[in-house]
Image 1: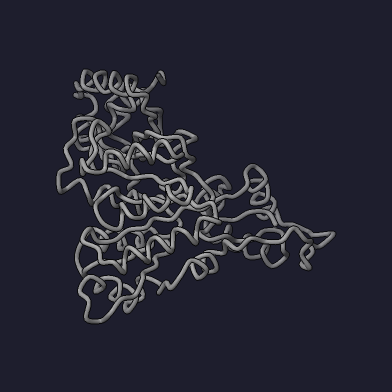
Image 2: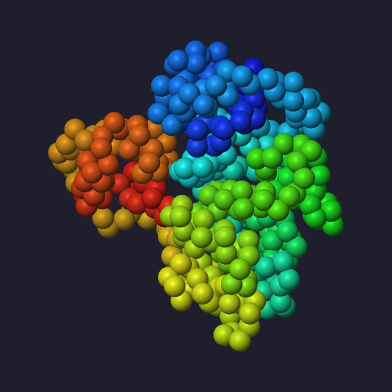
Length: 366
């Protein structure tokens, strides 16, 4: 057990402290330190104030957190806290990223390519055919498939992923002590067994209440590089997820349908209003996302042999040397430069063929 897990769990229970406030607090101190800090210190933090500081100091729910730890240990659940290395990095770019996630599985939640496939529960044969064909075509791309383990398109996407040896993760609107719908218990086990997993921000004994699903949907949207809407009416969970994905600056795709088919009305609406790109196949997705396999030949574009870099450009280069790819938000944060200086530095480095941009506002050395 992580030594600070008790306080990480407790932080998610404090009244008036949601994911946004937790993120603010963690910029100033560790989880345990938050509970030991003086009220005068906490209330001076912008976004916290006296009411939330009082909630922290009066918190008495450690017993419930200890009970959850017993469940976590018994069933070998992985916990992913905001500051953990294994936490899904794409979620960190969402303002309301969950403070703590519970995960049963072994696939990398920071895979290089992640796609969310969503759609209606009462799907047509057309949706089934399209989903299965799309997943099969994507199998060569080594993609992680995310969905919500619901009836309909979600389940089809999960099953097709298993069939085509793609890891797939189901994001739940309840705790890991149950599977909803119960009919998908066997599917959930197969997902975990086949290098996939189950992910949730909800504690054990949390029921799949209606208000939990929009929260679940934000994780489905935030974890991915691209969100694909297969089939949906003008209203429903898939439309909420698509809107959330747009708000997170994700690439959203939709499969078009007949104008007379109400079950495609949502997809057609997203395409018509430029909230989703029309998708006709896997190749189109791969090309749009820049996921084509590049040949191991030397590019005709050569870096300048003697490039004079500015101090700002050198700072950006050093950040990109630390890891394979870095998000624009991470560069802004680590560099200490303002966003305009970072943007100017990145543009200059791209023009000199020193760095390349990737989908999702990611950058790497060329």
